[in-house]
Image 1: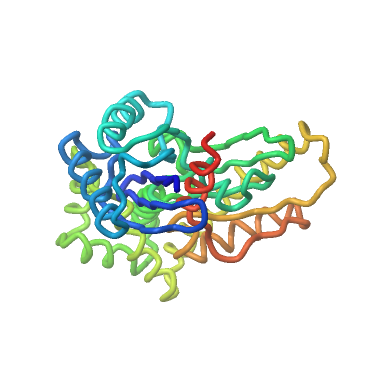
Image 2 (image 1 turned 30 degrees about the vertical axis):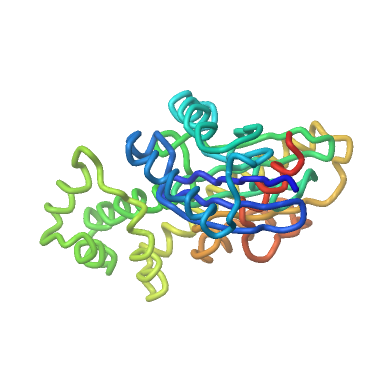
Amino acid sequence: MPYYLAIDVGGTKADFALADDRRVLARARAGSIKRMRVDEQTAELNLETGLNDLAAQSGVNLHDVACTCIGTAGETVALVTDWLRREVPRRVGGELLILGDVEIALDAAFPGGAGILVLAGTGSNVAGRTAQGRIATAGGWGPVLADQGSGHRIGVEALRAVCLAKDEGRANNLLDAVLGFWKLGTFNDLVAYANATPAPDYSQLVRVIVECADGGDAVAQAVLEQQGRELAYLVCLLIGRMRGESDDAGSGISLAFAGSIMENVPRVRDALIEAVRERYPEVVAAAGVVDPLDGAVWRARRGH
C-alpha cells in the first residue's frame, strides 16, 4: 500500500501527517522548518523531530513514501525551497511537491474546486480559485509589505495605536497590558524595545490585545476590527478579479478560513465577513477553519 506525507510549514511551527489511500495514520508537530525564520541547524532538528515522530507512531519506513506534498509560505524564495528539496529527499522516499501554503489550504477547503480562502496566522494571504482552476492571490507579500490581519501586523498596529493614543491624550488599558507582558517599566522602555534590532516578535502580543478588546478597551477593539476590514478589502479585490475572468461570474461566492487568527480572534473574522457582505451580500462564509494539512494530504495522494 502506498504512503503519502504532508507537511505544512509555518513561521512558528511545522505540522506533519502520514497517510495511506484511506486514512491518516499519524500526525506530528515540531518547530518551524522555514529557513526564512530559523537557521539551518534548527530547521534540520525540527524536520528530524517531526519525521521521527511520524515513523514512531505509524511504524512506517518513510523511504517507502510514494509522494510528499509540502505547503509553505515563501514557496518562491530559493532559501526556503532549495533547502526543502535538499533535506526532505534525504529522509523520505518518492516524489516531492512544494506548493504555497494558501494552495494547500484551498485544497483543504475546496478540494480541486472554486472558492476563496483567507489565511491569517503569523502572516497572511488571500487566495481564490475559479471553476476553471485558475488561482489568484492578494496580499501575502511578507510582514514589511503586507500581511494584513496577521499576528505580526496586529501586534505592530496595536503598538502604533498605543503611541497615537498617548499623543492624543486618550486613556487605554492596552499600554499597561503590553508593558506587563514584555516586563517593561515605562513607555520609553517600550519605545526602545519595540524599535530594537533584532525586533521582538510582535505577534506574541495578539493574546494581550484580544484580552484588552474583550475587556472593552476601544484602542484594542479598533485595531482588531481595522485588520479585519483590511483583509476584507483583499477578498473584495479577488472577487472582482475572479468574476471578471470567470465563465461563471454570476455564481455564489464561498469563503473559507485558515490560520490561528481566523480561528482564535473572532473580532477580526467578524469584521472581515461584515465588510465583505457590505459589497457582496451573497457571500457564504464557512464555519470554523480548515486544516491546510488536509489539503496537502489530498494533493500528495493525487501526486500532482
